[in-house]
Image (tube, rainbow, N blue to C red; front, side):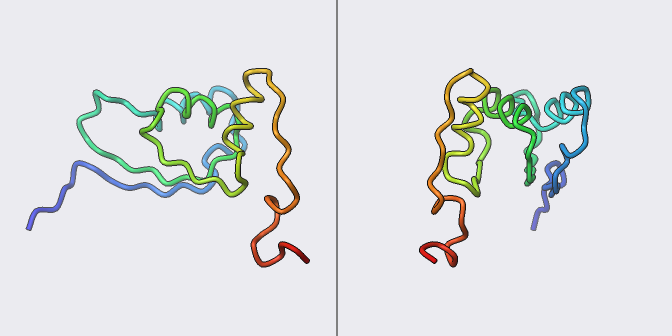
Length: 102
């Protein structure tokens, strides 16, 4: 039985919280997809900084699996950064399933 010690999974809860632009840049450079990286690492993170989300999305493409709590949020982040109008979600999209329709 072989255990791969070259890769790791790191869980991060809001690592972008309270970071200035230099801190966000450092976090981006650490988390971005790097095809030359010989090891496979997994990062599971809750992110809120729209600029960091936008840069990671643009740079890393399909190498990041995004999970949105609000449908369309990632597209709106992209629209916002590109100077386009954001799409306002319906109230139902903002509510947890158990509260919809009440």
